[in-house]
Image (spheres, rainbow, N blue to C red):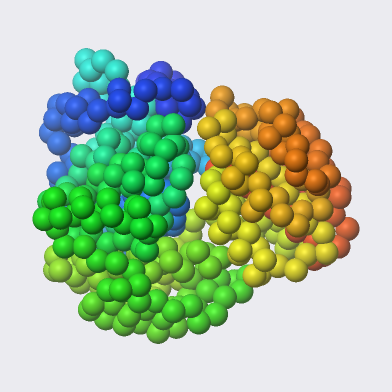
Amino acid sequence: MNYQEAINYLNSFTDYEKITDYEYKNITLERVKALLKKLDNPHEQFRSVQIAGTKGKGSTCAFIFSILMEAGYKVGLYTSPHLIDFKERIKISYEDDMAEIRERLIEENEVIALVEEIKPYADEIKGLTFFEVYTVLAFLFFAHQKIEFAVIETGMGGRLDATNVVDSLVCALSSISFDHMAILGNSLEKIACEKAGIIKENSLVVSVAQPLQAWREIEKICKEKNVRYYRIGKDFIYDVIGQNLDGSILDFKGIMDSYQNLHIRLVGHFQTLNAALALSVIQLLSQHEVVISSLAVKKGLENAQWPGRMHIVHRNPFLVFDGAQNPASAHALRAAINMLFIPKKSILIFGVSKDKDVRGMIPHIARSQNLIILTQADNPRAMDVDTLEQKMFQFKRIIKKTKTVQEALCLAVKNTSNKDDLILVAGSLYLIGEAYIALKELKIPNY
């Protein structure tokens, strides 16, 4: 089997990341558990922390991974979706020939070997999905690499997510808001119930401040599971000291230690909350005799990377990529843009998936734009530009339509004339992934 054959095999499974109309009730953990059992339960061979939420969970995972890596632990990171190459979803730390701690993605030859190992068993189980098989592949890879910790981001929900087979030491909940309502439920209570489904008995739980409806569900589940839970803003306190286009500075006071003047390079006020959640997880791990120095915390936060989220790709003029895809994340993005930029001209490249709340996003994402360029990712879930335009018909702005992300970027660049102009690409991580590729292929002068 070569790499393309391995990819073709993985892609032969139903991929719900490309489908919007499916029955959530058909999702089950039994298929994943069955496949893992045939492979001697690799997910039980390492310790794990798990993060669920609507927004911010990926960044939180990136912070935790970076801190654990700096602390000298061999750690794995599993996230979704990817931006360009699906190997981005699986990452590990390692020690190079100079005894320096580094990180790397899973390699093609490793994907091939793992697919060959999994295939005979996966073929025996009906109904497996792409995400389920790839999650098992990640856990098997981590076990083979003998990692000590896995930092795991849930997919869409939590309770029935394929990642929820792990028995996490710490379960963390990032910000919960409306998204995937057709699948997870049309109320914050229902959505929170699904997200908080990652909470296990005997685990420690920490959550950012949540809407009251969501918090009631989280608290109820914690009591049912008889677990100790902690809250950002009560048990863990953070203060933002300063922020600019190079990141933010924050202080943090926890139940174990306090830190001052911590620098994060991820841009945007909302990233300070994600950093605080990550620091809370790190402190809770100490209750499991996990030793992490203040220096590892400082270096880990500063070195953490998470592309596609308020990423300043270019300056003079500014080009910013952000995967904001629901009203809450669009609001956070707009607040960050208003705080950090004073553009002469602002241009938005916008594209979303079919199941997204476009009308809820528009007041935030499109405000103060001089030009809006509609486009769509090359993905079956992408909303076509004509439908998107209809949903924006009441919004009085100059709107142009393009068929591809490449075309949209070219049009946006042609409409900039000042070093302080801003091009913002937002609405979908799939869109952002294509924007990275397009920017590289276009070779636009000075970009």
